[in-house]
Amino acid sequence: RKCVVVITGASSGLGLATAKALSETGQCHVIMACRNFLKAEMAAKSAGIPKENYTVMHLDLASLESVRQFVDTFRRSGMPLDVLVCNAAVYLPTAKEPSYSAEGFELSVGTNHLGHFLLARLLLDDLKKSDYPSKRLIIVGSITGNTNTLAGNVPPKANLGDLRGLVGGLNDLNSSPMIDGGEFDGAKAYKDSKVCNMLTMQEFHRRYHEETGITFASLYPGCIAETGLFRNHIPLFRTLFPPFQKYITKGYVSEEEAGKRLAQVVSDPSLTKSGVYWSWNKNSSSFENQLSKEASNADKASKLWETSEKLVGLA
Ligand code: NDP
Image (cartoon, rainbow, N blue to C red; front, top):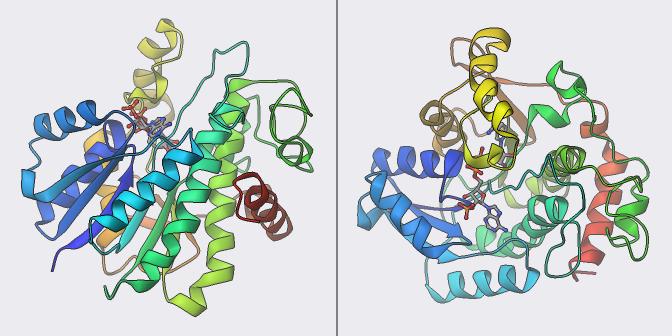
């Protein structure tokens, strides 16, 4: 049978390119888990993904209620779950004031981390039940959260501190909209959320890999400078960023190439090692990359896990 892969945020950018690459293998059925149903349908159509290779299901990660509903809808479809890809993200670098998710969490961390945390925790049971030989849970990371790299050292740097803002509920009422308890900064909130994604992947690996055999992995597919992720940035940035990445940092990668990379992490038989953060070198070969000190801190990962459980209502 075909491998069933759920991809969040498959309506544009990396998620859509990955859905297309997986569809082209002829061995996958992609569940496009998207907040905008019509946009997702149209995106699949214009990418030329054959109808029998995908299903669109509604998921708004900025609402925990919607996450639970998605899990219900998916289960009622009767399909098995073989691979889950947590890909969707928002990036609000120019926001002066925080915005909030349905439950009142700062929107970047609320969507990118807490929504995915609940989704992945609930769907772990479904992954366990699948009889597919190579089950995987993949969370898209980023270089920007890794302060051991040049890109990760561009201010404001990611820093979760002692998680006091998250413990306080990630809003201005009780504490702060930022995980470390500091002043709101949209660019930092995104980077922090990516550190959470990478920590979550490793905590899943420590808690569940041996028992379940599921592969837990993260990746940095390269700088895909033209995706919708930068839609909220100032126009000058959007004009200059792609050539800067192409010719100066040479970190640029096309959506198509990035999609192929993520599709490898989903289905390549040689990328089954668990607990790995994958990256690609200039020749487009994958390698196991090092995470920064903070993004590989096991105590922080465990505290993040427990705090997040409380916020999403699992504990
Ligand atoms: P895009 O903005 O093109 O795609 C993001 C996707 O997430 C869209 O489909 C968007 O939906 C979806 N999304 C946003 N909010 C929600 C929500 N509340 N519920 C459900 N879906 C939502 O960006 P990219 O393709 O660049 O980003 C994909 C991933 O790649 C992210 O995790 C990002 O951090 C990561 N990444 C990107 C890099 C880059 O250079 N672009 C580099 C490294 C990592 P909609 O279409 O409705 O807006």
